[in-house]
Length: 220
Image (cartoon, rainbow, N blue to C red):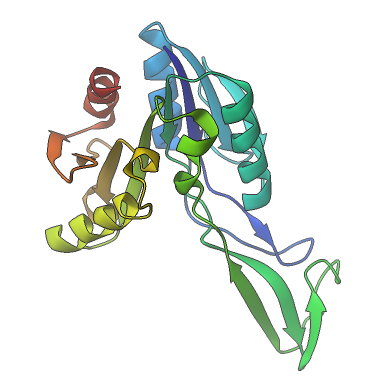
């Protein structure tokens, strides 16, 4: 199979030395990319510059949400992937304006915002890339989304997954599967996940990333 994986977290600059980011390391995507490769698949990973890199797969890097969106669309449209594993921690918001001492400036106006000033940041909501992958790749491509929660109940996790599947009226454009995991349960040796199909059926429960990767290969 030809598999595309996304990983790491995007960085949204405020000025040349400050940015809004998340804590994603890219460990999960790098592990899965190598597992898929060693199983005999052709693997490309789109990952953030600071993310852990797979040792085997072809890599394409990005910094910002906009860069990730552009690269992901280009890869999906120009290549024929059998599956897309969208594990990147994508920024929900990007800064578009900073307010310094009551005056608005566009992002990038300062190489470094002066110290001692009052600073506010205005942010715009980014579109959900997972909503576009099927339209970019074609409905026959198997698409897997990830949903990370934090200290959520089972019901809250299921609700978060359901929102991903309900993002399109056209059900051929929603992901085939969503991997649900919660930050409170992840440790050095354990990474429990539940995999849901787009009918909200829990098709698999796994204890670690090896089990996750092997199960995904069976499903896609």
